Length: 207
Length: 175
Image 1 (cartoon, each protein chain N blue to C red):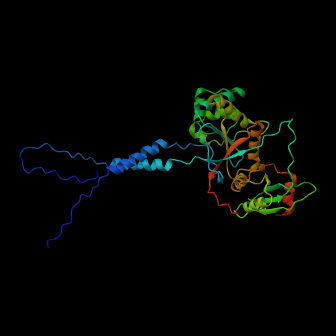
Image 2: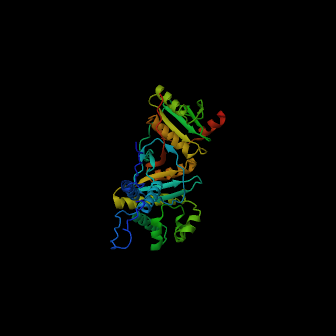
């Protein structure tokens, strides 16, 4: 019997389907990707079993970190600038167009409004290095609630709908701070809000 | 494609020079490399998970000329106090200068406060839970106890400020 010659196949294989799939996925991820924002403070939210999701639009978010600082952020660049205008009018401050643009691009901030023009004029590196003191929220100088109310009136004017108010607290944040924030909201008759949490599995309720 | 190009047969010595036939296949390897690099990058940077939220609705503060709301009956009240180091204290009824209910301590495990709440609801179906976070508890405890309300489907609960009687009760119990 003659020796069986091994069939010589070319070592290359047709990669076309794989490439097709790879590019399909690349396109998908590129289009769905939301650039992760460079937030001023990272908080570790507690977990809950609630499966409700935060709405995407029209959200006013108050971040409370473990050093009792409060940060403000809101969605939507045009309404952010309008909110800034309203606050500037209230506190007799003026912002240059460049500062307004920078403010619109910032994901969140935590400086008293008097320091805001100076903060916005800093370069990106300096701004990152700057330790933000948080927005004042005590009853004598409650700028936090002014921001919330300004954002609220602007978004009611824009979308005919009050914004969702979300509180994103660090798990180690202390209760008096959270209570102060909630009380300030309640004073303005904002009684419904969301607490941002991580998802944890629903336990089986033992009876 | 990654293919070893077969040496084109040049037909030997001299003769007519044939037009070189180019292969229609191109080497896709660098493109594939790049595609997968991008794919990996976008896959890792994408955050799909929108944050989850827990909705809370605080009671509307009463207007000055509203009728006085009905006082909570002591038999229906169940108070949960959140203390330091993730401790959960609870007592049945209400506390004031004259009556000192028995304070018990538990934790956030499934055999802790959850079991207590379910057991209490079995006895007193229309229980109202008063949640009083102490100043030295943390926000995580507050979210956890609100979450327990959802898990045990306790409908009537309220987030209340801690009173001096409550803090005294914790102190004097020594738990």
